[in-house]
Amino acid sequence: MVKVYLRNGKDKALRMGHPWVFSGAVHHVEGQADAGTICDVFTAGGELLGSGFINPGSTIRVRMLSTNGEMFNPSDLSQRIADAIALRAPLLDDKTDCCRLVNSEGDNLPGLIVDKYGPGLCVQILTAGMEKFTAEIVSCLGQCMSPDFIYERSDTDARLREGLSGRDGCMKGTLPPSVTVLENGLRFNADIATGQKTGFFLDQRDNRALFAAYAKGKTLCDCFCYSGGFSVYGLSHDARYSTLVDISKEASGVAKSNCALNNIDRSRFETVGADVFDYLRKTDKQFECIVLDPPKFAKHKGEVSAAARGYKDINLLAMKNIRKNGILFTFSCSNAIDPNLFRQIVFAAAADSRRHVQVLHVLCAAPDHPFNIAHREGEYLKGLVLRVI
Image (cartoon, rainbow, N blue to C red; front, side, top):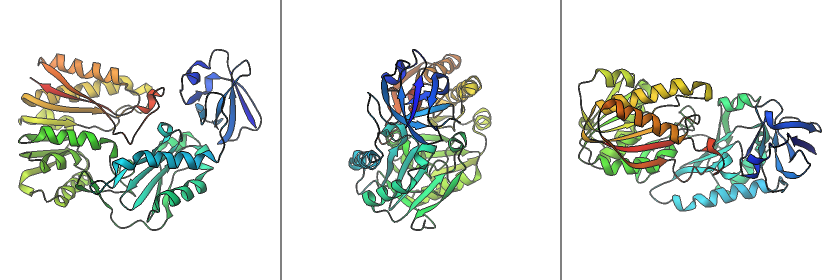
């Protein structure tokens, strides 16, 4: 058994439930520590803290699998997957057939993500430790869900940081040419093989539903629209008109197809292929409801300053292009931007806009994306609903 001994005083975060041991916290390692090997973690004084996956080539040296002096048994893996799936059961019904089933550290399964899209599953295996359990994962998912297909999208930078190459393709069955899913009674195309994330932004489900309630009777601007999810919700709940803006022509095409899937008349929306910053600077339109759902501006801490400027600029532009008493939904999905910093950035934009701004809601990912309360890094999606007076 590989044993990892921490430096003196570096056990506090683990005792509080944080699931990562960084390389700087490790004093020494005993045993053959190959990437993905299960190890036991000890304090400097020799007290067993728990077990985890070790990766000597990663900055995150150990990803914890158990704490409080407990040891991880590989047979626990299937039970944890089954428990995670059972937790989501109340979210699935005749109106919703897609959700996240396993959320990595949030479900105590570091490096494993499983998303349900109608009759099939999309899987991401992102750590060297979880890679060793690939066969067991596929078997367990088959037993628990009986999916028509299991498609792997292990093609992210996270695998590169673990010393793994990217990989995608079917693990079971055959991926259909197109997959259409239901979310709160609305239909969407999920581009599982090549789309962003695993094919659809499942984490925004509840926020889209809330947006629909505010959108009724209003003119909308759906910025960084991608698949047009916010517009589909708004237009399906009697919004007057929506302008969908995205620099990607492919995104505009997906957004149009999702509007068509839900029988939204073409006269009620337009798609604009443009950089959102440029569009908001140049347009003379004023909107009653704006949503800002940009891609990740900061991939690591070194990009926080530049990202903060970007978030401030885009929120300031939105506040200048929104009508009196307009509603602004604004988000950040950057892990490196914590909720307090994001709020400070948006408040700074409000001050520069010289408009009075009220906070109506503080938002996060839908409940199928749980996170460990001690793991701030898992709280990646944060949002605010503002009334701009």
